[in-house]
Length: 256
Length: 256
Image 1 (cartoon, each protein chain N blue to C red):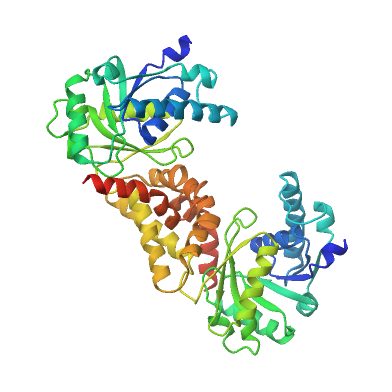
Image 2: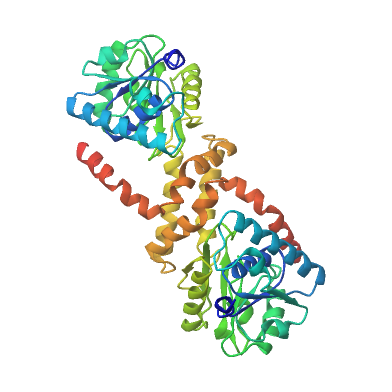
């Protein structure tokens, strides 16, 4: 148990599906996890989901830290008091509803309660941190840490600093993500859609063009990705694939 | 053995890497495979590769038809005579070098030798069938059947008819692909890049934009696909994912 305690305490603010998955990931890696929400019912539902997911990960041999699922679940606590949730924590993952106003409110409260070395990370998939942290005194401790659904099986996390996020906070967030087995990618600056959704929207735009031009049905577009590009990209990125094809392409060009 | 023989004979024209993979797939599914090339050395290399790949598929329990790898390999024959290769065959997969001139030459020869019910399919990834079959008397029997590398593990095959390919030939090609465990997608008409490369180039274009704008390094772009979108697309297509996200999006819009 000492080894686990050494990982420290993580605050989970907002206990919907994404907050629950974060709680599962951190607990699975051996952290002490403290759940916070304004709804006791949501906290109870999150606890049930975390316990269930830890057991499923255990069955598939996918737990990321030492101990059994039930030992890891013992390190999950909860509170309806935000100050208690943040106290003694080094990293806070906020996963409340996707609303700029709500993010402003919750980050303002966390700004008041946070210690000097607490990282305040948002799971938002659409709202840059600069839109809800500008007026905070601890704004250099705030950033976006965007998971990909379902985060228990898809390791990518987009780390998106605001213009005033400190480099140290970015580096420590990336390091924490690696300790739970996630794969952080650090964006150099805020852009609309971050990186993943930029690429995803380029794919969707081309997919709709193919459907609109009468080349493929929507179902067949999905098959092109599912049975074609998806399995390939699970092993190689788009630029990596270009290198794989380079020799064949060069040979082909030589015959023209 | 009778069950295997009932699958019929497949002609493989051109014994490079792609021809060898096609030979492996058809042999693995229980077809009689006849390899043709102008080079005896290429045929021997292809046979060695097919035997090796069948054994590897057997180890991973991925053989697609009845019998052992060595039983399946016994159904692989070869010839330096194109007429002998095509005789008695119902489907021919051409995988020669990616050159329009070469495709014109080989398809012209096959046109002379083919029976009424022989499908002449090209593995080309870039040249529409209309560019090398227009003047053939059997042009209605010709089409593109484009595999994705590595075809032993990525099931997608793009079926691209020319304006004069008969509907019956398209349907039979799709059916044959299903018998070997591949996943055919039928394009309604010829377009540059077919469907897979159209989507792939949209991804590459967006990837380069992200690099050019200084948002991500090339290495990190590859991580976004490898650890993020790739595993997701191995299960769901881009339009399927949109439906998965729909409830969350609607809920988010309600809060604005």
